[in-house]
Image 1: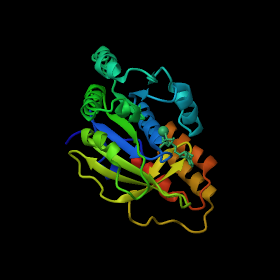
Image 2: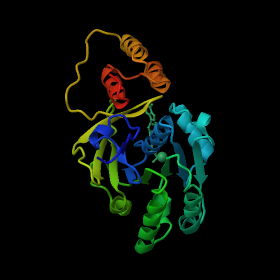
Image 3: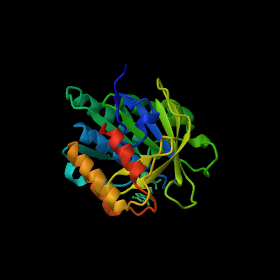
Image 4: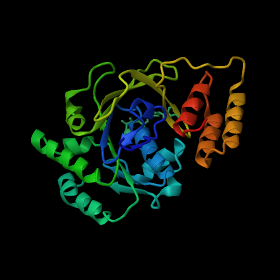
Length: 291
Ligand SMILES: Nc1ncnc2c1ncn2[C@@H]1O[C@H](COP(=O)(O)OP(=O)(O)OP(=O)(O)O)[C@@H](O)[C@H]1O
Ligand SMILES: [Mg+2]
């Protein structure tokens, strides 16, 4: 059995045999606003919960802005900044030089360091566009993956410029081929809580879910994927606050870690959906192996 690492995306691990394998790269493809950056932050923060470190390679927004946005979504990034969470900001730099020299040096410098590091490249698109030459693009992306995969599990986001329901555009195929796994996010602007969907396009060495799975955002928690097709039993007549209070009581009773309690508390404070949170709570309890 290969060891698997939780992605941090609630509900996703059960679709991919329990999580990601070490030293593999996952690409998350989606158009603007589908949740790629949320996905990326949640992936890093879960690693930090597990005692790992996180490296956020940003080719666009400055770290301060990412931290600010992360904090708004409820990820305690400020607290971990420069302790377990590190940033490399490469705006307007020579990407080739970064991929050929800087990153390999960084990885080499950390070679003896035995704390696992998750790496995020968000968004990877500018790197692909750095060269008009297909072969050079392929070399850049492939070398980047090979280098940072030495640190741990890697997640790279790729912007998509296609309409929902259309198969992924040609311009994003390259990183899909080169990655070990790929997930497609889509947004259907039709209202309702589950108006975004996730599909696992590939996952090497893994028996993965084949469906299209709705997901939602919960402030303080992040993305929750509705991976089970089974209907959840939702108890009628209870107020949502009662549901949360019961979950908090259960969490206390089974001595759930503090970060799990914080997530439930944040959910209670921010739940603005007009349906019961029982299913999402169940997915979170399951993810942390709590019964
Ligand atoms: N708790 C939440 N409730 C509702 N919507 C949310 C919540 N958190 C984030 N969102 C929405 O999700 C969207 C996606 O955010 P995110 O930045 O992760 O997307 P993205 O795919 O990285 O977008 P971009 O392509 O612009 O970088 C934002 O537009 C935001 O409004
Ligand atoms: Mg983004």
